[in-house]
Image (cartoon, rainbow, N blue to C red; front, top):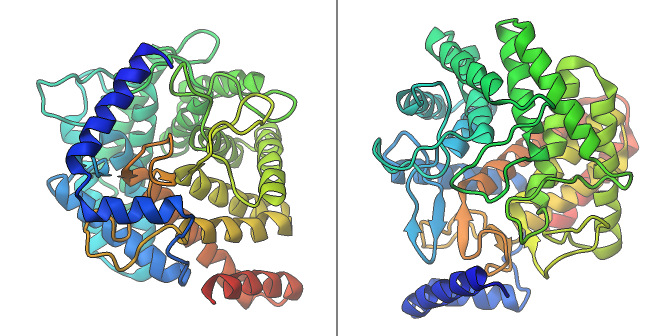
Length: 420
């Protein structure tokens, strides 16, 4: 164990020691260690509870930016610009699904807050927002995620300030890009400088071009996506895709790459991006089929690292599989996506009296796992909500379709298994 990791573990243990009398932490940790999850209910009940938790997190963040999450070690975190940005589409989607207009108001408050704290050069800061005089270094990935939120706010409201903010952010991304298409920049939250998961940043540039055509954004996105494709090994694993030098990529960052590639194919029609995502998605599908659960990290040969599951990545993988089931018609993607959603749902507590726990999604299962230990990050809740909304949409479409009867039976059978 490195000295830095030894010190970090020591600090965590000290904080845990201070809080070890917390009955909630003791109860949840014990249940997780015994492999005793709460059990899955209907997807809509889990979705509604997840959105309520996210609203609670926004209220904890001051009603504008969303708290990064709840930690048993540190309590509620300050608001997090990056994830607040890509929560904006989630809130609009839920408002469209349920007709709850107050969710639109919340989404617009998030977008306004992001405009208010945008850096003078157009970029978005890394880390938690701790005030105008704190460490506010710009971060490429964070900027791309907030662009996605601004653009959704623009399409919903037609308010030009959101498009203007997105274009300023896009121009900064152009200025920060390396000639080979990658982005290399220090940030306050990760140790590595260059990331395959910036495919999701390239996607944001393509979205700007879709609303305000500009060949510069397309060219920059294409260069990054070409670089990303070059990072993929023959077995589907991506190099340069981890957050820290001493860790392997978690399923969270692996999913980010697939998401960026799938959305980029939607906007460009370049099937190479989709095929690359399918290669990785099929490997993950085979892992779930053979192991029955999804490990949280993998090395370059797809060997699991650590004995935990990254719930954020699981929710994202389920969403990716649902998208690919639409694009390919592959029933295995659809069936396994529902199974994965059920596994994440089973770890969620819907009736806890603890406001940081009720409806939240842990970073890891068990709670002490290597990804966001002892924490309920807001982005885990975001990706579960997204996946459950897509699941509901696809199931409704299948039930109303005249064809695909066996496909519907398969899906409904999976749902019945989860709810019994």
